[in-house]
Structure formats: structure tokens, C-alpha cells
Length: 297
Image 1: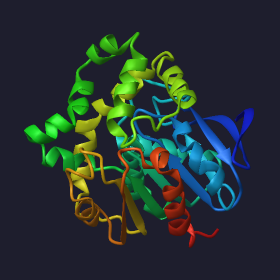
Image 2: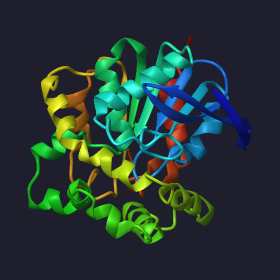
Image 3: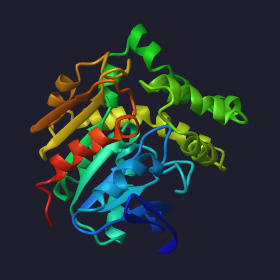
Image 4: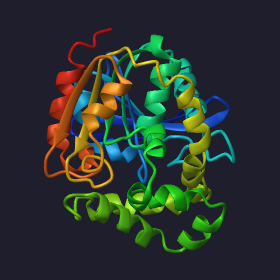
């Protein structure tokens, strides 16, 4: 394991590490001590998406925020992006860190990995929070013209090679579209953070990695259909932004996650789009601290 430079988020030192787990080199942020809380970012982000949460949570917990396979400073192999294997990435990372049980928080694509982790590694999970996510099989089940229009990027990213060719050289424009369209406040992502995202997606293999995550959709749906009737047993909290057209305005999110989890807490956030942790960090932190409070080692 390699220890790189440390930075500070609020009062907690955040240390960058890399470790080889499940056959790939994984980068993660590590802060705080205590019961482990793992934060899984979504698209089009990296582990820095959790910059408003890490320092707050690290006052009571050990916080681990990895870059998912294909994203950020984690390795970007040509294969292995089905959510069962990406959940195994996290399980193997925990093995390397000698962490047995965790609370898990996932947003967007990270929520898909977290959901598969909850099914495949249920013994290791004590609490699950999912942010602004509709499970892939439920999107597929409802696919029609309106859904396809809202989830156009799902379909675009599935096309082999073409997205990378069109986005190359225009990463800032590509990212700015998503951050502006998906946020209630189109200026929610500050310039410094936006520049970090641009740099991350301009690195070799980053576009292919993100596209590969989406190109695993068919495998993800097939995996999810096999155990669709198995509900997540640990306490689960679903958080979503009420203003995002493709999630809170298109789906009955409480009904969606009631179908997924036995013990659900549903928390919509007003004046918020697809990135609650970035748009309404104080509210998200309040909800997470309250939800995680029973988690003791």
C-alpha cells in the first residue's frame, strides 16, 4: 500500500492511498477512526464528490472513499465492470484493509455497486444509504419513449467507441452539460472542483472506463433479475433530489426502494437535483449522521 500526500477536509486529515485488490490498483481516500463508512461516488464524478461529507463523517467514523473501477486514479481495465465484480472490488479492498463490516453510502453508479454489495456480501453490511438512484432493472422495466429521452446518455454510452471519439477534446463541455442539467442550481459545482473533474476525465482510459461502466448494463440487469425477489435486509435509507427529472420527478422513489429493501427510510430533498451530496451537503450530512448513529464497532 502506498501512502501519498495528505490534504485536509474540514478538520479531518484525508490521506490518499493505493492498494492492489481484486487484481486492479485501487485509489481511495481515508480519514478518521472508528466504525467504517464507505462512500461510493457516481457518474460523472470521482471520490472528490464526497469532499463535503468526509470531514464531517470522519469526526465519528473511519471513512473510506474509493475511486471506482475505471474512474479517477483507480485502474481502468478493459473489462470487469458488471456490478457483481465492482462490488467484489470493494469487498477485496476491505479485505486488504482488514475491515470486516461496514456502513455503505452510494450515489448513482456507486449506488448500483452498493446495492449489489448488499445482496452479494450482506453479512458485511450493517447499513445502506443510496443517493438519487433508480436500480438499473427498474429503468429497463419501464423503458419507453419518455424514459429513453430522460436516460438518453445510458443509450449513447452503450455505443462502442463512438462516445469516446466524440467527447475526446471536449471533456469540459461534456461535463458542464451534465452538471448544469442535473443540478437544481446549475452553478452548484464550483470552478476548482469542476477543474478537478475535467482533469480526471482527461486522463488516459478515463472516458473508456466510464463508458464501460454503462456498457455493463445488460449484465447488471441479468444479475439483478436473478435475485430480484430478495430484499436488502439491513436498514436502508434512500435520499433523492425532488427536482431531478429522471429520478424524483419520473419515479415514485419510495415505492422503488420499498420494493428493494425490507427496512426503508425515504428522504426526499427539495430544491435539489441529481447531486444531493454536492448541492445540499448540510442536509445530506445531517441525514447521514442520524442514519448512521446506531453503527458501532
